[in-house]
Amino acid sequence: MTYEITRDALMWSLVLNVAFIMIWFAMFSLARDWIYRMHSKWFKISEERFDAIHYTGMAFYKIFIVVFNAVPLLALIIVY
Image: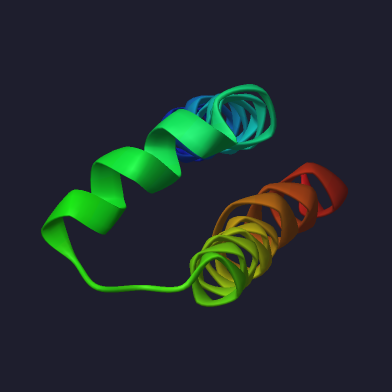
């Protein structure tokens, strides 16, 4: 794999991951009650636990984006 292919793959991966988390946050912010009602039909879960699960999931996802996409991309940009 060449430098350009790796850089482009990391760049597109970063773009798609950031878009996904932005959509997740927008859906959670704008349609939280609907999502909670839908999930509470399937699972017995309190609203506080539901919020904690989503915020924790978003936090871990952001950390993974930084560690596995942004930092390697930045390292490639700095090195080349």
